[in-house]
Length: 318
Image (cartoon, rainbow, N blue to C red; front, side, top):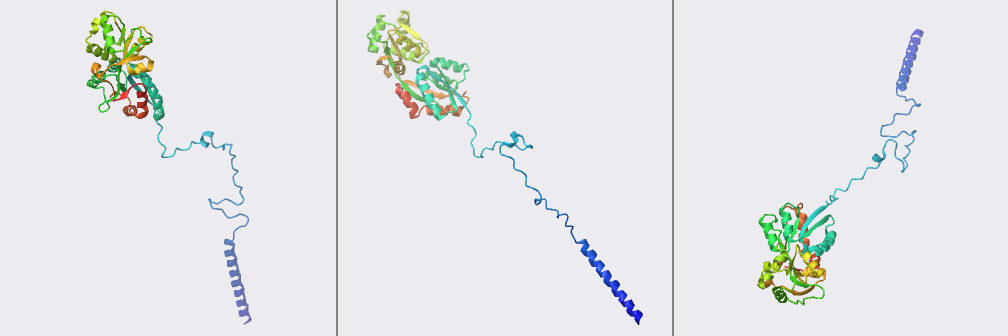
């Protein structure tokens, strides 16, 4: 009996020892070593590490070049594209020199990207240059004839041609009026008597063509007068005004606008019966490098500011 109790007691001791050993092993496997902190997630900063020092504003980080650190800001999506510079070539009658140069200054405030380049000469000379291949965007003639001829040759862009201005043909004299001419009738008498020297435009110049009509109106033959030495010619209206201004002739026939610009004394103005209306047509040419810009400039010539300049020297709207 005693042996049995001793055996049971041993079994209990062994069983208790096994239970204690298993419990200790289980606890040992779940214990974390406190000498090493648990690994932090990649998105978190270790408490023991210091934040990176910020780069001073005036310095570029070593890993970046100045170009990389100063990338230009992209323009807003709604920023309009830059306006392209445009050059417009305008062929215009010599009698429009002063007015168009003044209007060009005004146009700069309306279209600052447009540069106007003028070619001033007689309408006949300009027409010939265009026919021979000269670049021209806008043509303004001092007579219908030159524009009509270019239109027939298909140089004129259809639906852009306008009769823009009307001028007058004026009889002018130098200072002192040495021959005391006061009318076209006085001129006709002096020419018939061979007692005067008159300046007029060549036959291919509109002002010369108007003068030819006036001579025909009074029954005078130009060839006969020229052979008698009473006519001096100019290749454009400016040359005629210069002859009168310098008093190298005693009378001249020019446009009223040129008389105004040069300060010449006007003693008479031709009627429509004598020479017809003096119409200045204008048009965009179909050889224009920028048709829309050419149309815009032609439209501007009809606005009050531009017409004010024309009217200030004697032009009138048609």
